[in-house]
Length: 340
Ligand SMILES: *[C@@H]1O[C@H](CO)[C@@H](O)[C@H](O)[C@H]1NC(C)=O
View (cartoon, rainbow, N blue to C red):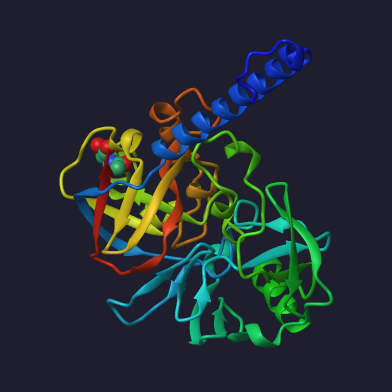
């Protein structure tokens, strides 16, 4: 037996024992780190009410207007890929140029004036000023054999072109010419993109939080109290929609800096999210959602920079969420925070 103590039998043992020892320490260390990581990231048992969801939005085309839903009180599905309403999903469409590069409202603010409505679970109807409405049928696109390589903020992803009829309409709506832009579709049933390099060091973010054609993660929450506070500092108030969150939270009572401590969020009875990163802001919020005009004074970004910069390059407002338990959500659902 190994414990017999006969030196003759164990001439070679000291070295291999060291090897085994090192191995054990390594395995032990790794499991400890994994254990610590898992215990730190375990979903809480207790939930505390903090407010309600005042508005829910999603954006079938990246940079364009939110899906218009006329019925009040509808339920939205949240799964790992995105939010959806009766089959229509958040940001599974995106505009690209002739080189298949992402095109957004940061360059073409009038994209925010392209509206969409659901016709059926696979059909959208688009409208834009001075153009006849356009119907798009997800079941009848040009692809998939003609997928094109594109990227969202440098993260590569292949996408399916929607076809010439659609491309012409979007080129007309955005460029006022017949060509130049294409609409592409996110063709995968799950998140395939890698994490935005800016966020890859965030400890709780996962690859599947990348969503569809999202800038960073599949869900985003805006705090209406923060927008209200920002508006007290601005000459011309902004609409919370300019920040393009999925959920607009109305807090019962403001808790200063709560956003720094919130780790877990539950919306309604089932749907659980992990707060994975603060949302840092580019110039998009400077585009007025009603007029598509860029603010001449660079607001609200300028004011945000004055008090929400936190040593970063861009100011933060809103939080990026990763889905941890799928479920349904609707407006006026209670929002809970998980206490640990
Ligand atoms: C919401 O905004 C208010 C006012 O800025 C702030 O006190 C509170 O911490 C914020 N809460 C969250 C969860 O972001």
